[in-house]
Length: 479
Image (tube, rainbow, N blue to C red):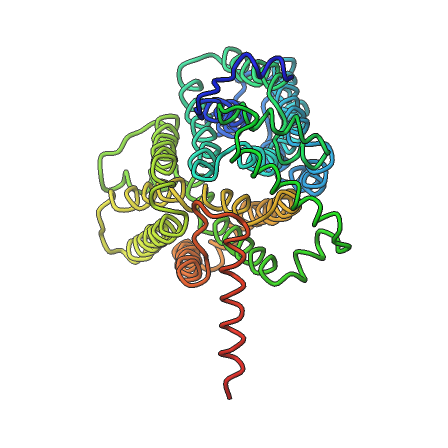
């Protein structure tokens, strides 16, 4: 490994290796985006007698195909944090990429209902791992002033995967698209074999010299660089403190005041992001287009509709990558959560008013829907992953990521399962209003309780959280 790294060492101070490494690391999530995007334009074709399957899919087959990924994601996601801390970021990234290869290989061999359901069940592995392992890996190979921009590449590449699937489904044969899907993770798997483990995990394993070599490669500086040695010494000190602490990981999270506060902040932001309604808007975009076409000329095929949505997502995540290190996490989270809330409120109002026979322009719900999707991709969604790596030390990131991922997948399952029933019970307008209220609550909570984490170490963030806790205690003590 040292020989390979030496071939790409600059020695003059450059961070090009961090950018290249980050792009490679996020390609598995691009592949998972293709998995998720593939199904949307294919459902009607799979149910057709002229489709690629030897037998048409039934409604029950489609139901299992769309939902089984979230079930297995919860099962596989539960131990993912422990496995990431036990076997390393690189090993689990390779395992994740291998599961993507197996998914596409099954579909290349057979597209019968049982085979596609099996493939979608295996997709539960990257459905969890991509959002647990990759953010940790990215953070630990990024300099402090790059971790937001490089972390936002996760959602950017996933949305590229979505759009790639939509475009390929419109232009290519089913078999050609499956081969493209198979080749992407296969090539990346062999590239990742030659990529290094993170310096922080190497320190945890006691491989101090190798950690210095990797960090020097990432920064393009000599291994004797003073700043580099100080940072490695900091990792060693934290590792020794962790080993000396007799409390378990959950003991630290629940008993240490600033860590507990950081965990609560992360959990609230993650759950509110899942219940901001973006997933429902994506799934029911066709319904919104259909209703809008009643009053305006908006005749788009289903494939063109999902391509438009994919483009809006991609533009939003591109913006996040460009500005997250300039605006900071807090401002971006506050503004985008507020904007998604406004979009959901417009949708709620439009559906309510038009259901009572009052005319409103058809472009309004399309605008609101695009606003929600754009702003969720531009801030609310990527920040919810970035803050986990900002707020916790490398000993805790895996556990917190796994737990919040389980909560996220449960939230997705609840929405997928009960949204239609809830709309029938109280009406679609009240459902969208609920999403709007969730977004405004998240906006208010972020404004008052979320600490800015840009360019700050975990110690600096926890110092700020500790001071807030002391102020709160003093106020509570006043008679």
